[in-house]
Image (cartoon, rainbow, N blue to C red; front, side, top):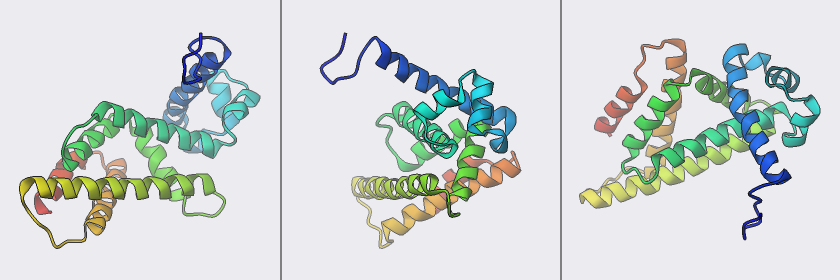
Length: 194
């Protein structure tokens, strides 16, 4: 059976989609157990029982696979949040979710750092687009929140959005180094300061 949107509900296509999802889910487990340096495509394939050729069928490179893990986790967070109102409510939800998956935070931070080096174009494109979209979303949300409260700000909302993103990512790095850093609590403080 195939739905009108062209996505099969059974058969080889559905199995391929399911297999791809399993690979993405299991890759984060490999990162958690072996660290980012132990996650070559071959090592990931060996750990999850998938041939190197099968991985290459779904992902052109290790970097593409790892970026897709992050992309899928972003989508999962968006689905879990739904239409949750409030910039900082959303951010603290994501922070709490992230600290429950240290390997995810490690993967994100490591790939972000690597994205500024040449040869990592897939990660660079992902993070540039992700930051651009995040700034745009934050600006829109901040604008809506200000309008709903009847307040006005002379601050450049794009700069405020960049500051919020920098605080969030910087707090995650600090948390990786010291698990006593309270990401969500510090973001709530930032909300009060702003």
